[in-house]
Image 1: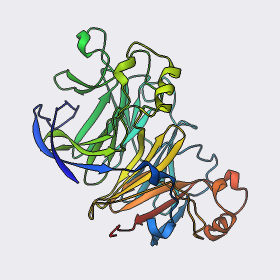
Image 2: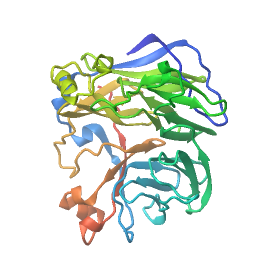
Image 3: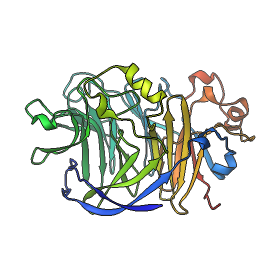
Image 4: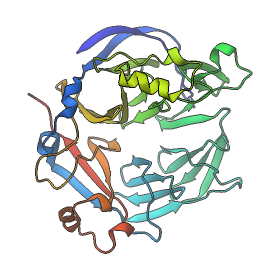
Length: 376
């Protein structure tokens, strides 16, 4: 269902492009979700086109991958952010190990804290070091190329179409009081900054994360963690693209601006005055996949963009596919990609994949697939 709305614009930090600060009317997709559907189970074949499923076992390396905190897919590589080993792992799309970037330190070509990463074609990996407030660029061979400073503490970066986007958590105390405690999208070129989502000095509220970029080959989305909306940049403007309506009131964040008591917030969650949060957002040109949590409820939302149909379910599977529902980490072109840790797989799946030896010492398995079209 589409409705017309008015949206306020914000600046985004870009190298090599400009974003206009204006207002516009446009269509947004409003998706109505019934909470009762989150209790339903689903058949894997109802959700996933099983004929498209492929498994790529990542080659065993001297030190195994500790965690997949971010997965970037290129035409020929898997790039994995692993905060456990503080490394970037690089494999080809057949699962063969290529290289590892492990340069934590305080030297000029090193990083202190590996917060997140971005990929710049054809072969550069940017590491956002929020400890040093800089982005360190390496090539996929592991060579240091250059670094660039960022003026404020940043929470996410993205590079696409020749533009580097940087999202900031806050700006210095020298800023006007009306702008101090907000997230910012900052124009590095002229050092201007425009605030948007609130940021509280004592920390974020329960269940709310930083705003993030969600990127695919054809589109860039921005998640607003304080609502259930997703934004895109269209015609050099930031516009609201999707809004999820859960038939619940929005949690009143501003109500407790001067209070940091988690118990007060939890009380309102239990009373139903919290809409929940959407996370792990991935999309292709045909589907939008989200994980949804609200208090002790965890569910999954799949939106078929072509047919404007919706699937909402708990994530429990009811067939013999020998696989729990693997919510995707990312997408590339028309396929979604999930990460399966060997110790979580059933024996039948381990045998099917040909994983041998100590499962605890095996690297993750990358699963690629497409979702079914929802035509009914």
